[in-house]
Image (cartoon, rainbow, N blue to C red; front, side, top):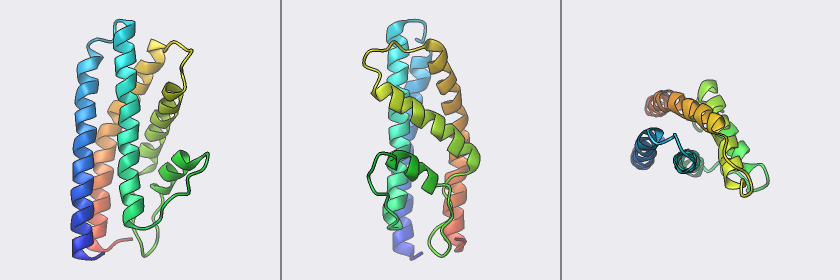
Length: 156
C-alpha cells in the first residue's frame, strides 16, 4: 500500500475511533442511570449509535480498498462479514472471529432498536448487549492495531 494512502487511512480510522470512544464514554455515563425506563432508552440509543459508528469505520476500510458492498437487504451483515476476510494482495482482515461475534450481537440489537416502535425495551437484553459492547472495545482496538501493523509490513 502506498505511503500516502496508508496515512489517509490511518487518519480516517483514528478519527472514527475517536467517535467510537466518545460513544463509549456516553455509554459509561448512562450505565449509571439504567434503573429507569428513560435510562434504559438512553443507553439503548447509545448502543445503537455505537454499532453505526463501527459500521462507518468498516465503510472507510471498504472504500479505501474499493471492495464496496452492494446495498441490498443484507448489506449490513455482508459488510461485517467482509471485514473478517483477508483479501490476498489487497488487504488483511480487519476483525477477528471474536469481534465479529460481538459486533453481530450489536448489529442485531441496532436493527431491533431501530424498528422497535411498538415494543418496550427489555432491561435484561439491554444489559446483555452492554456487556458484549464492553468486551468489544478491547478486542476491536487489538484488531485495528494488528490490521494497521499488517498493512505497514505488507502482509495481506
